[in-house]
Amino acid sequence: MTTETFIDLEADARVRADDRGHVFHSWSAQALIDPLPVAGGEGASFWDYRGNTYLDFSSQLVNLNLGHQHPDLVRAIQEQAGRLATIQPSMANDVRGQLAREIAAVAPDGMEKVFFTNGGADANENAVRMARIVTGKRKVLSMYRSYHGNTSTAITLTGDPRRWANEPADGSVAHFFGPYPYRSPFHAASPEQETARALEHLEQTIILEGASTIGAIILETVVGTNGVLVPPPGYLPGVRALCDKYGILYIADEVMVGFGRIGEWFAFQAFDVVPDLVTFAKGVNSGYVPLGGVLISDAVASHFDTVSFPGGLTYSGHPLACAAGVATFEVFRRDGILERVRDLGDRIVAPRLAAMAQRHPSVGDVRGRGLFWAIELVKDAETREPLVPFNAAGADAAPMTAVAAACKKAGLWPFTHFNRVHVAPPLVISEDDLIRGLDIIDRALDVADEAI
Ligand code: PLP
Image (tube, rainbow, N blue to C red; front, side, top):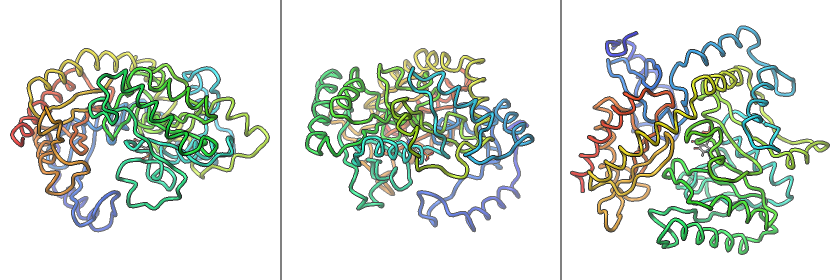
C-alpha cells in the first residue's frame, strides 16, 4: 500500500464514532480528547484514514523498537498462533523457555532466571515483591523524577505527578532526588560533583529512612519520561555500593531503555554496574503482544528454590508474546541493531541536536544516547526557566502544544512531555527518515523561539 494515497473517510468516521462512543481512554478527560484514528503502519511510519502519514518519533510510548509490522515478528506470531496459541504459565513451553534462555545469555553472569509478566508495571510490582520477601524489609526508595507504571505498587513507586491522584498511598515508598546536571538539585558545578552530591543525598536518605526498613532501591537506568536523564559517571556504581553497604537490593527498571534503545541489550551494561533485579517490557518484543518480565540474580532466585514465589497471572509468558521475543533476538543479531543504534546516535542525532541547541534560543539542553534523546526548552537560557511550567496543562501548555502541532503538520508524530521534545524513533528507522525527522523538529522549534 502506498501510504500517501490511503484515504477512507467512511472508515475514519466509523472509527472515530466507535472510539468516542465506547472507548474509555487512559490518562484522559474523556470529553476533551480527539484520538487520531490510525489505519496502518510500516517500519518507522504510520498513517491515518485521511491521507496523512507520520514519521513515528515516539515509537508508540517508546515501545516499538523494531517498528510497525516487522515481517519477522508478524510471521513468528502467526506461526505460533497456528501451533499453540496459549498455554498456562505453570506448564513448560518451547518459546517461553527459549526466550528466557536468550535473555539470560545477554545478561551478566549470575543472572540465569526470568519471571515473565504482562508488561512493565507488573514487572516492577513483582521485582519489589521479590525484594521484600528476600530481604524481609518492606520499604522501597525511588527517585522523584521517575515513572514505574500505573498499577497499585508501581504508581506508588513513581515519583512524578502521575502518582498524586493515587495518594495517600501505602506509605512504604520514599522518594529521593536523582542526578540531573542541567537542573542540579544539589547545585553541583560538574557531573562529577553531581554524582558525589547525589550519592551523599541518597546515603542520607537511607540513613534517615532506616536501612533496616529498606528492601530495595528501584531506578530507571536512564530516566525516561521524566527527561532522558543519563546518569553521570560513577552514579550507578555508587548506588550499587550503597545497596551493598546497607543490605538493600538494587532493582533496575529497564522497561523503556532495555532491548536496544541506547544501543545495549540492557542499558545498565553501559554504566559499569550489575543490579540484583532487572525489569523489562516494551522493546523485548516491540509490544506486538503484551510482555514484560524480571531478570533475577541467582542469589535472589535461589531464595525461592524451596519457598514458593506468590506471583503470577494467567497470561504471564504468553506464547504469542514470547514467539515475538525470540524473533526480536534473531532480528537484533542478524541486522546488527545495537551497533546501528550506537552509530546513528553518535553520528547523526548527537551533532544535529547540538546544532539545534546553537541555533534556537529556546533550546536549553540536549541530552541522550543511542536513539533516546530529549530537547529541553526554556524561556531564557540564562535562568533556565522552563518554556512551560512543571506539570503544565491546558493554556499553560500552549507553547508545547504548538510545537507538537507544527511537527504533526509537517508529518512527524512527536513525543512531548512538559517542556521537552523527546527523540525516540524505532531503531529500524532509515538514515534518510531520521534526518528528515530531525529537520522537521528543527523547523518546529522556530515556534518555540517565537513563544519566548
Ligand atoms: N517503567 C518505565 C521506566 C516506563 O517507562 C513504563 C512505561 O512507560 C513502565 C515502567 C510501565 O510499563 P507498562 O505501561 O508496560 O506497564
